Amino acid sequence: MRAVVVAILTIGLVNLPLMAAASKPLGMVVAANHAYLDHANAATGASVYSDDALVTEEGGSLRLSVGASQIYLLSLSSASLEPRDDKVQARIDRGTMGFSTDRPSQIQIQTPIGVVRGADANPIFGQVSLLNPSKLRISSYKGTLVVEDVTGGEKIIAPGETYEGTLVSDASGGADNNPPKKGVTGAVVNWSHVLEVGIPIVAAGFIACWLYPESPSKMGCWN
Image (cartoon, helix red, strand yellow):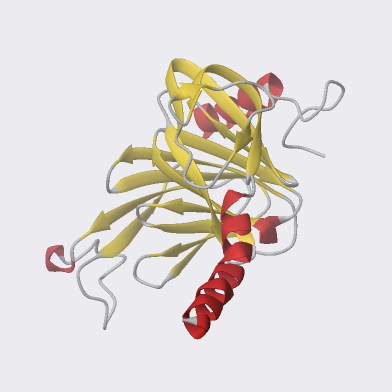
């Protein structure tokens, strides 16, 4: 009986750090308009925990601080945060998410077709929009982004570039300029450089940064 009690106490002590890590806030609400945090009205200063539902209504917006990073959701968007190794992963499920950070190693964006992160240690400012469950648009306004897609391949997005990625099955054969990779089964990502939507997207990014400054005297997203 004594051995059983000791074993239970030992397991409990081992799990304490894991419980503490799971309950640690990952972010904080900086500004909210017609937005919800874990199914309640989002309020400035509220803590955001792992897997809390982040949702905006039509015409709504939500801005978060995540350590040294900034994340914003535009109208009709939903997302959540979760710890991932030594960084925070923001998962977008619907709509549009913007992100800005001086420390790219601390954050990444999970999308249906892969993970978006900074390509190096330089500051980044970008935006991801889900066009449908298998198609998204990624823009880089500052710094270089890299997308590690579901096939294991990487796509580099330079500053000022916008790309659309579409998840298709291997059976479809992929696009002519991006055939399915050998050894990859089930899906492949086709990438297309988008030019005609570049100006509206950049304009939306500027508006978002103007609406959500990092401080009263400093515009967000640029340093």
